[in-house]
Image: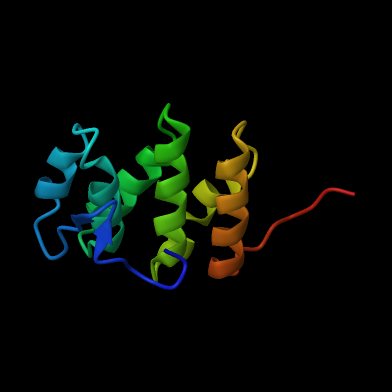
Length: 114
């Protein structure tokens, strides 16, 4: 997905261009959860950012990882840089790697302690 927004995830068409309620409803489905997260990430609805921030803190590490990945693809993803930087301290290595990639993509600034 690093090249852009996919038309399909796991062989399922991503429901772009729908109201935010439609992909939100798909989150409950194990089979459609992944396309829902991608569709939410592409949504222009203001609530999409809040939903992505919540998904980036989900119990499921794979949900957190994908939420962070789509945040990194958004043109306004920098508004959630605090979420991306928090995931860099995640317990799951795949989430950390994805957060590092998203932070680089978004040109996040990190304050380092010496």
